[in-house]
Image (cartoon, rainbow, N blue to C red; front, top):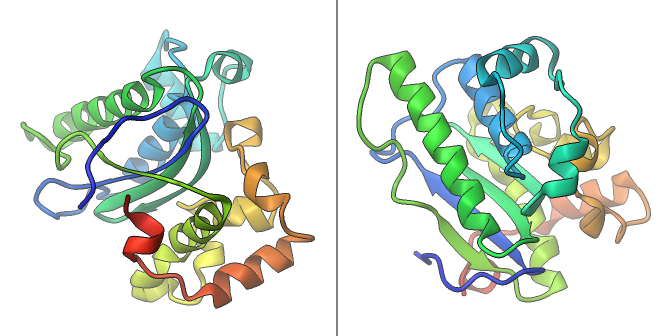
Length: 217
């Protein structure tokens, strides 16, 4: 599987990782929400003054209790799409500052590991190394990658053929109202389609699979 190579500003990357022993990363709804909060908010070095309070508010209301302008203004990555699965995750990001993707993933995984281990009285590594990355070479690959990521919930029996309703993916934000505003920069993809329905048809008929052509350097 591809590991990290040189990452360049202004380029797009498929980032993914899984639980170290292929067990579930998310044991209850609060875990899913916690990780979702982290991938949205940690796009910039903007500090938390009370992370526990911020996350608790996000858990209750599915929105932030602090302005997000500082995050948007100072971000070192732009989040394009994502899908959280029971034992792994996929995201597409664009690096906007040197070293941004590495810092972003490091902060997410350290923060979530600390939370998960404390909550479950565990210790040690939670993820398989730092992360895996694939450089997106052209627009066709970017489009088909988005379809692949948004089709991932089909692996879960209860969500098969209902992935557009899956709450832990950006698919619903592409075809319905964007829940996260400028924290999710989907326009690079959605503006290439005449309507949300056209994008949905593309995802549902693409048949995109994990192949060397689409997902490996």
